[in-house]
Image 1: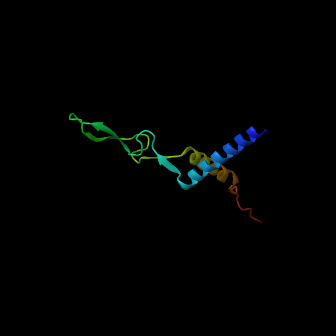
Image 2: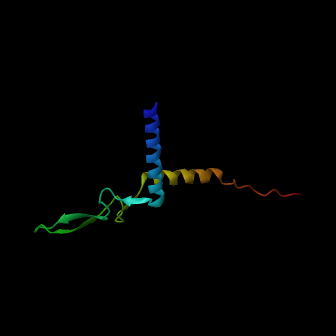
Image 3: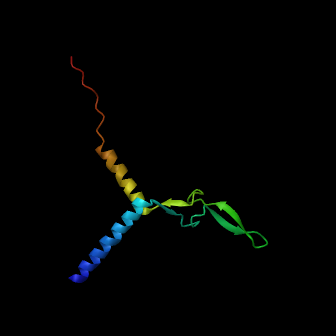
Amino acid sequence: MPLILLATTLLIGVTLCYVAVCAASPFGDCRKCHGMGHQLKTDRKGRLKRGKDCRRCHATGKRIRVGRWLYNRWARIYRAGTDAPATTPVSKG
């Protein structure tokens, strides 16, 4: 039984740490360009030069974290579901 309790506590701890990271820094470095916003290529002499802009992050070097993306999606659906429905005013007469 203590092993299950330890695993559960560890899982909850990791989850809370990831939630804190997503709240503090919702954007991370792009995985394709490593946060540079473009690819590096070499010229014929072997010197590095700037390549094309990264298509995944659109040359920003940043991406939204998965946890933040899920939170944004949940919040958008929740907001859409709890908005007051538009009603037409009833005229007396």
